[in-house]
Length: 280
Image (cartoon, rainbow, N blue to C red):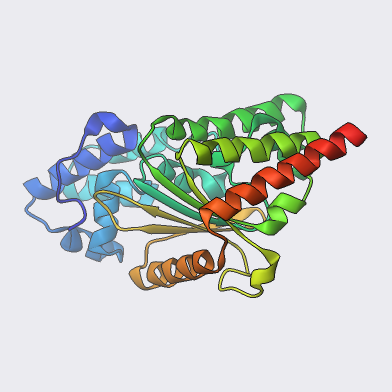
C-alpha cells in the first residue's frame, strides 16, 4: 500500500511535510482513504502527499491544519515550498522526477531535459524565448542541467528513453551543437547509465503520435504520468489513465530500434553533423 513504509524526512522538504502528515493521520487513527474523502481525492493521493511524491496544495494544507489542529503548520510550510526554479506547469513533475526510481520517457521533438548538454539546452531556450535576456536564459539552462545530477548516481534511477528519429534530424543550435548532444547521449549509453531506443520514421504510426510522455515510478507511491504540450503540462495519477499511457509507451518501445542499433544510428548522425560543420 502506498505510504506504508518508513519515510525519511531528511530526503527533501516535501518529504518532511509528508512525514508530518502521516504522523498526524496515524495519531488521529484515520486511513488514507478516510482522510482523502472530504477532499474528493483518493487514498493513494494522500499516500503520494505523505511520501513527498506530490506537492501539497494550499487548499489541502488548510484542511489538514483544521482537521489536526496544527495551528497553520501545513499551510505555512506549503507556502514556503511553493517557489520553484522551473516553469509552473513543470514544477511538480520535476520534483517527482527527482525522487523517482524509474523514469520512462518518449520524446517527440526535443532531446529530454535530463539528457541535454548546456549548448543544446541554451539553443532550445533561445529559440523558444527569443526576446528573453541572457541572464534569464542562463538561469533556465542551469536549472535544466541541475536535473541531470541524478544521472551521476551509477545505478538509480533507471532511465529508459525512446527518442523519435525527428529529434536526431532537427539541427537545434546547428551541426556542432547537435554533434555534441548526440555524442553525450551515446556516452551515457556506453556507460550503461541509460537505456535508449530510437523510433525510426519507418515505424509509421504509433500510440504516442499526439505528444511526449513521461512515466515515473516510485518505491512507495503509485506511478505518475506527465503529459506536456506547448507551454503546459499535466501530471496524472488516475490508475486507469496511467495504465493506458504505460501500454502506449511499451507499444512505442516495441516499434523502436534496439538499443544497439539506436546507438549506431546516434553515432552515425553525430558523425554526419561533424562532417557538415567541417564542410561549413
